[in-house]
Every structure is written in structure tokens, then in C-alpha cells.
Image (tube, rainbow, N blue to C red; front, top):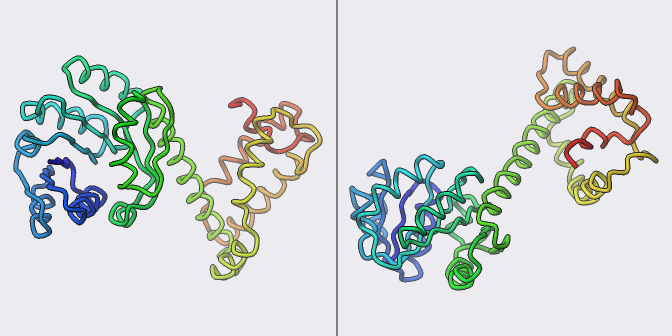
Length: 282
């Protein structure tokens, strides 16, 4: 028996995928209707988390944050069976995972964090990426079942909060990427370039292919012999902001980047590679 606590878009599709594989799944959600809707496809819904976990050897969580995880587990704990394993897919703080793992271990309950880079379609299809870290013996036992839930299970090692930290880092990159795309579209509108031409540009010139090389350059901590001088990059940022301002468009990312560029230019690094703005974080 499997219990799933949290049946929003992601959780409900995880449940549907498990049901298709013939698993018996008991579900609970704070908004009860989201759990009861899954009864139509074979799940058994409960109004209380403690009831939903009764008889379950494995409990999966897809909740909102640290507080919701702690509150839900506390309420559910009266229904835990001996030897139960909790697998938490919630995006939480890295700081919270260690104490949470130790708390439940002291009570004889195995808790492990396995956040995902997966949207609802991935959860239904068993594609995408799932991160996991912590007790390697536990992970070895869980690997077969978790691998079947995702396209790739990535073991981040024995540090219990490493998966949580890497999930936040990954989400930060996705947010920065989306904000950068928003700035691109705003600038395109400012100079009357159709968004379809932006798509064509990115299809022909894939800047994502250079991400690893850019990171390697930053981590080398060598910013001489520039491929793009900071002074020149700052000039380009000025032109971008001017074009947007003339068209009464708002840029989100570039003004903040320009401010950081100015700080490094004032420190005498204008002739270095522009990636020096990341130097303090290496």
C-alpha cells in the first residue's frame, strides 16, 4: 500500500501513474476535492492524513513548503505503520531537511528527501528528473521504485540536504532564464522585432550550449584575456536599457546586471572579462 499526501497537479499525476501500474494508493489533500477526484481513477481518498497513511509502507509527499510538510507529518504520524518510509518530493529549504530527517529517525521513521525537476506531464509519463540524497542504504532500496517514477533518478550523495539545495539552485537558474527571456522579448518589442524571429534566432544559435563553458570560465577564477570586456558588455547593457526606455518597456534583469557591472568597473576591472561579476561567489 502506498499513501500520497498532497494531490495538486504534480501529486495527482504521480498517483495516476502509480494506479496505472496496479499499485493501491490512498490519498489525502488539504483541499479534499482534489483527493476525492482521484477516486474516479482508482485511488482511495481520506479526509484525514492519519487515515490515509494507515497500512501504507511507503508515503510520498508533494506539498508546498517546510511548514506544510512538518504540519502534515505531525498530523499523519498517528497512522504510521512500523518501518514506514517517507519520501518527500516537496521543494523545501535545505536547512530544514537535516533536522527533519533526524527527528523522524529518532522516532523510528525513515524520511528521505527526493525533490524533482518534473512538471505534471512528467509525473504522469515517468519522465523528467528526480534528485535524492541521504542514507545510501535507504536510497539503494528505494532506487527501483523511484526510478520507475521518473526519467532519471540522480543520487546526490550522502549529505542529507544536498538534493534540497540542488533543487533550489536549479530553480534559481530556471527563474533567471525565464526573466532573461522576458527581457529579450521586451527588447524585441522595443525595436520592432517579432517574437517569432527570436525563436528562429535561438533555434539557429543555441546559447544554452555554452552554459558549461561559461561556468567553467567563472570557476577557473581567471578573468584576464577577456573574450568580452566588462566595459564593452556594460556599453551593450546601456544600449539595451535605452532602447527599452524609448519604447516605454520595462526590463527586469538587465538593470540589476548593469548595476553589478558598474560596481566591478569602479573597482578597476573594466578591461577584464565581464564574467568577473561572479568572482565573489567562486
